[in-house]
Image 1 (cartoon, one colour):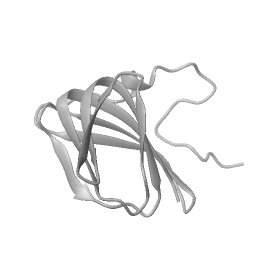
Image 2: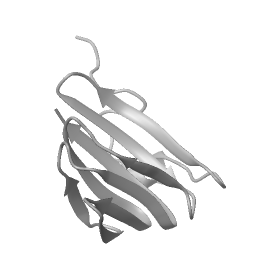
Image 3: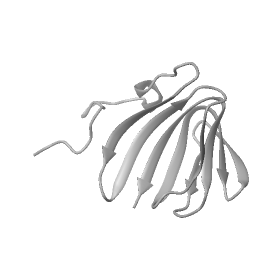
Length: 110
């Protein structure tokens, strides 16, 4: 049976925020799985880095793992702190900004 998840240890207790590093002036991403039904990706944002406004074909569930991120959905801004989550609905314009250095888990369900 082939592994469905990649770039992450299996059968091991993990701390997700430790699975991706910050890099000055960059957004770093690590894809854990991606197929027609779901995409799971870890992201780290250096302070001030952003993914500009775009739309997704699936509902995007974001959980803050570290720091503070600003999520904008339909022009409304939300601050996301460690342990907090938000859903960016499919087809709605949204953006992500590192208000501080910020790590997140993104799960998109198509």
